[in-house]
Length: 324
Ligand code: NAI
Image: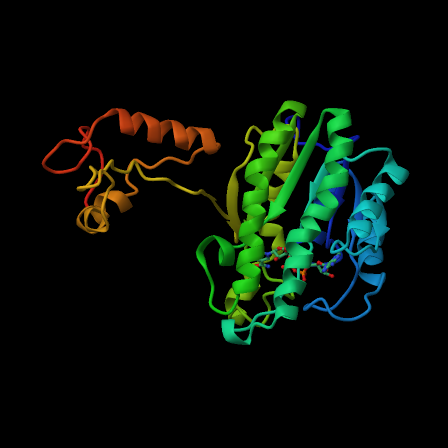
């Protein structure tokens, strides 16, 4: 098609691309012309085991058979050295890095009191440190070239919560914070950072989802969004999108309009004033997804310039809604 989104002359690194979602991204990017580094250390679902090269090798074979270009890499994203090696292998094979999809992941689900430090640390190491370890050397190359597309992979478990996943939820939400700031640091160099929250049938989810739903959740239903965010057409920077089963929507941190509360006897607002105004403090109607810290501080300053009215302690401008 004439207006096809292509990735010719683009070099993409996809971590954890030996199976599941990462494999699908790798195949689709290669099909559209990208040169791909297929990283996967080939361990077990919980990150245990020595790993094997076969997962990444198989995907590279698939890409080559279809006429695409790819190299395998077996480094562990959880170490700084591993992250450097992954980026080095892209530069060595293809001369640069344009696209990085931080996708590698493991699970160690436990209810909170059973969540031993080793399970907490292992999940943090792969998801959070893993993204840091690969993104930093990749960002250096992207900055030099004045172009980059970086994808973080979060999860509904982090965005909204899921029983038994305090470790995973924390790591996945930390990646949103990582994106929030990195998008600002990369903007000047046309490096865009966005986040995908996928839902897909994979070995990470095979025992969590009912079999009939599992069948309708092929990872191929997710890749359209990831591919678009990786493309030179991508207009957004710092957004989060849910994607799965062909359903797509944006998720965001929304900040309500808020209310300025008058001070008590000592001039400071009281706990009782919070109690009495909680619905208005909590209201999200007309909330905003701020782009950066300064935007929120700016709105707080503006609200403060509308002095609270003496009798109610409310702002002069009535903007908050009754609670749901
Ligand atoms: P998957 O288990 O099929 O793929 C993850 C891959 O990462 C595996 O091939 C694994 O060998 C590799 N990997 C694990 N640790 C690694 C390390 N230290 N270094 C290099 N590679 C490593 O699982 P899936 O579902 O494709 O997951 C991909 C990403 O999507 C993960 O970040 C996951 O947390 C996320 N996700 C998946 C959801 C789903 O419904 N499948 C839901 C929300 C998020």
